[in-house]
Image (cartoon, rainbow, N blue to C red; front, side, top):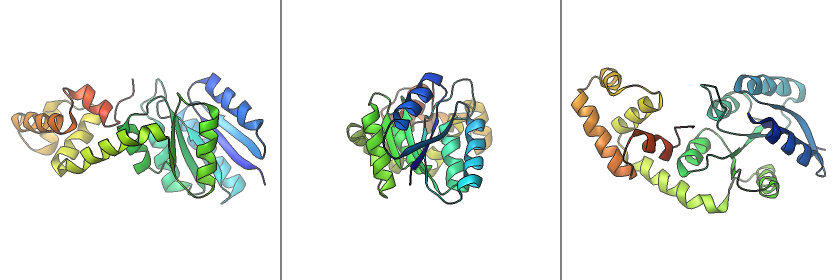
Amino acid sequence: MAKKIVFFDDHTMVRQGLSSWFASQPDFSVEGSAGMVEEAICLIDSLSKSFGNEKIIVVTDLSFSNEEKSGYDILDYIQKNAPNMLPVVYSSFYGGGYITMACEKGAQAFVSKNSGEEQLLKAVEYILAGKTFIQGDLVNDMLSVRDMYRILTKKELELLEYLAENLSKEDIAEKMNISLRTVENYLSRIYDKTYTKNTIELLERMGRRFV
């Protein structure tokens, strides 16, 4: 039986290139592609209706330009609604924070776009065999960020979530029912724990910012 695969990426050339390359591989059947998050979710629903519980590999980017949503939303949707889908993240955002977030949202493999199709094929074969796959040279940074998440307190993690929503310090203070001074103290501690100097660095380090 052919291995079914789809591609979600906002760059047409990437989608076309991957579709063409995998279509040329033995035993692969390309079932579609999408360049926007909502379009991707519609395709997931359609394929689930067509193929039931049959496994389908989903290769998705994390960043979708000109959209508020991201590949994280695709991973969330798959995790909640399409357990037959096997998500592989293929992205130019491959710092430890992005890998950690993607894995928490159900990604079973992670490959950087700096790698070629052969590495992506290897990741696909791993997850079809019931294994997970993280590109080898990305593992150490992922583990480093996971350690950072473990040492953040619940309040610090809550503040990080609000920062990721682009809330101001004043809005965060109101949401958390604390003073602006306390917000700034929390931020200072978070910067120290994550070895970052400002909010932009922090969100990038923890996988929460796409630019």
